[in-house]
Amino acid sequence: MRLSIMEAKFYNKQQDTPTTNEVSTNTESNEPPAKRRRTSGATNLKDVWFTWFTQEPRMWSSTDAGTKYARSTAKQVVASLKLFLPDGFKLHEKSPRYRDEVLKIGEAAEVELLAYIRGRDITARGAQNF
Image 1 (cartoon, rainbow, N blue to C red):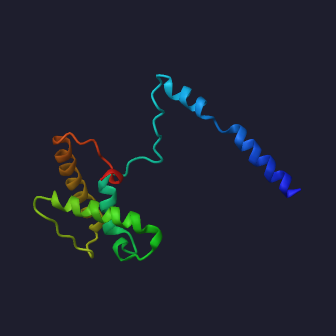
Image 2: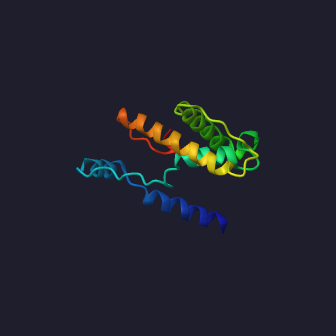
Image 3: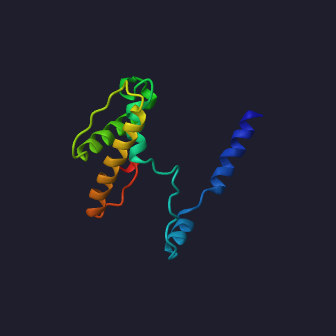
């Protein structure tokens, strides 16, 4: 019984796959290829900055392999944003306005970085494209 089910699936797959002649006729048409859809919206650079400095436990101290890519991307974004702070920055973690200060500094750095990028005709805006 299992063998007949597997054979049916196998033969149906062979019938469903296009032959090389069918593929070539599809590519000969003058239709542009379909655009790839985005999976999510672009993450603001200031949001990555805010998360880096305010998330508990701290993002940089995590050793979770599942967040390795996000941690690496965030590290690069934060380092790049630091380059665009003209006066540097100083944060006091004990301050009651700590989160507001982090967000304000992140917004200022994002504005400067995006102005720099626009001046060089680069279209990347989100943290994923950085």
